[in-house]
Length: 189
View 1 (tube, rainbow, N blue to C red):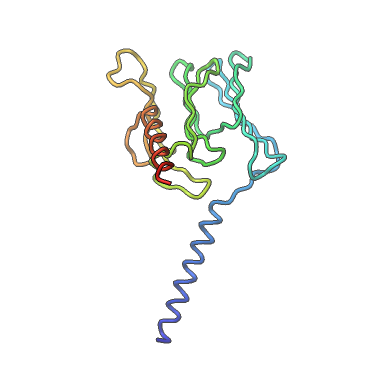
View 2: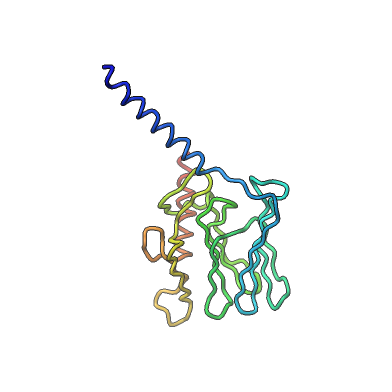
C-alpha cells in the first residue's frame, strides 16, 4: 500500500498541472492600447481596430470598410484573423478560430453591405478543438483554401473553405448547420 502513494501523488500532480495549464491557456489580456490592422484589396481597404485602452479583458472591436478612400461601413463588435477577397475584390470573407470577440465568419461586399455574420456561441460549428473562451477551431487556418465559386456556370455555387478536419465545406451551408446545432443545444438545456 505505501508504494502506491507516490504513484497517486504523481497522478494528482499531473492532473493539477493539466488543470492549471488549461486554465492558463484560456487567459488573455490585450495591451492597453488602440491597435489597427489594415488589409488592402484593390480600391477596398478593410481596417480592424482593437481598442483596449479602457478594458484589457474585453476591448472594443471595430470593422471599417473603405472604398476609394471613403468609409462606407463601420461595424462594431466584429474582428477576424484572416480576410479573403474574391478575384474582383468585390466580396470579402473574414474568418476566425478565436472566441473573442466572437466572430466566426463574416461576409461583406465592397460597399460595406453585410451579407453574413456568424458568432461563436450563437452558432455551434463542428469544432476540432475548443477551450472555455478563446479557442474555437472550426476551419484550417494554416491552409484555408478559400475559393469563391459564384458564377452562373458553377455546378455547386458558394464560398468554399477547408474545415479543421480537412474537408471542403461550403460556408453558407456550414453556418446554417452551426445555427441549427446551436438551437438544438439550447433546446436541450
